[in-house]
Image (tube, rainbow, N blue to C red; front, side, top):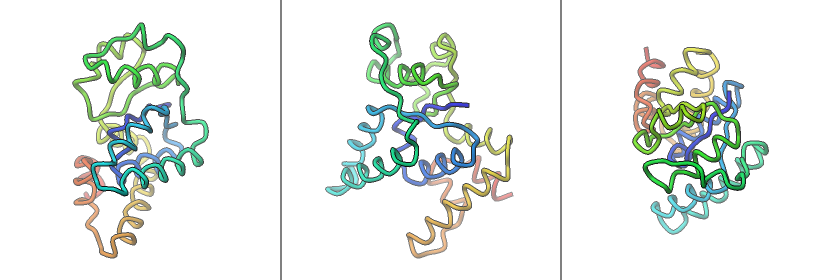
Length: 180
């Protein structure tokens, strides 16, 4: 299955790392566009003067790790599409151009299910999406999350409780499932 990852799920580091770790275990193929990556880089300015530079370095790393994930724009596609927020039409266009089955985003309001269904797409929030992945292959998702958790603990220099880390990453259902 191919899933288009919106900028809002790529920007939070822990969430992005979990999504890509799950993809790395073969549960889905991630997709994005150059414009989505640019949105991520611009959003990272909010964390301070080095935020954008750090984001651009991370973007270079994921481009190298996932060379087939970046979907080029298809000429004229955006012109025929509509979403409540015209600034998000490029996300829908990238999903269509990449033959994705779904869009993973926090922005449910901006991606109405009926509009996406007309294009053969679904929309899931990241917690719901990762729960579906976990139900399909608990071992793979648990291992992926465990790897990201261990890395977060190493980087922070402290033992971070898994459930709290996932709650901060806006993955409360996954946190509950993995803690039980």
